[in-house]
Image (cartoon, rainbow, N blue to C red; front, side, top):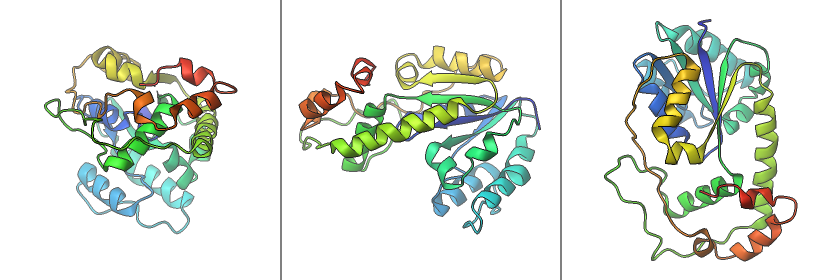
Length: 249
């Protein structure tokens, strides 16, 4: 394998689309998108975008073995002359294909871990489902206004399951062998270029200024957007009080 293979691990609503596309703009780097999505239509589309053929990871028969075959036969060998070559892997993809064990074997990979407060990522996911708008693709677009939208009700038990799931996934991701770099969503949003400078240095490629292709979709008061926020905040104030003091961006 080339020396600078890497994976980007994250969960939904952490800026992973902006992030992997920013890396992919670098002339010496490539970061593939959701070629391992659990959705076959998405896998086929993203594979064709990157490789230009129909040899995508088809509907799984053995899941794990199919995914490993795709990685070893199609993905890694196509690194070409890129100085850094990687793929975005959401926790859900690692779960679906049972690929945690594959990456827990030392493979000379670098790991870029994209992090966000789990309360914020959960609320962002709920907001995206409410609006059915998942990305804003240019800086010219305006953020979605909060006015005129019904406040969201957040099921506390669903939220706490999300927090527990992400806690376990983050712990497992931090244990993967290889050099690690953790990037916070807040830094990606507020300090895009300095953050990407850190990433490119970590990947061993030259400095580069990628285009900021996406903007944060919403900019509103969480207390006004969440109908039962006092209840949620009170529940979090116990075991998960640190999540209230962390950035809820």
